[in-house]
Length: 175
Image (cartoon, rainbow, N blue to C red; front, top):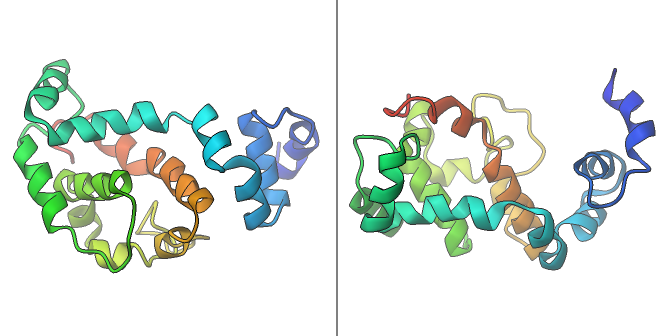
């Protein structure tokens, strides 16, 4: 069944439904879509961001990181919390982003994302497809999404779903 065929079922879903968000993303202007689903009030009600970002933020705290490291699969085996702290301190971007998003980007530096894709974080924020830098077909650039709270929330949600996490979390070396 094509996406268009699914739309006839999804258009009547409740606004909280992920299917309704997919439908709206394809049928509304991007600005209207962001306003409907990604305002702070609405986004943080349905998103996993607060729970998800906590494992990223724990990488910056030695004791917290070690607790998760013992469970396995969260962090590369060849890293420590100081690696993440140093990465965040050295992170230089040409735009201002909230701390939580900068923490994700600095985490990706240590995790090998930018090395794997042979791209610099400064260039990455201006790429058409930041979720998969090997594919240039994308719709939004990070530097464009930094303009409003709604679009930053959209960026947060897309960072949760980076294909990179699926590629690397099964391998403790991050390859």
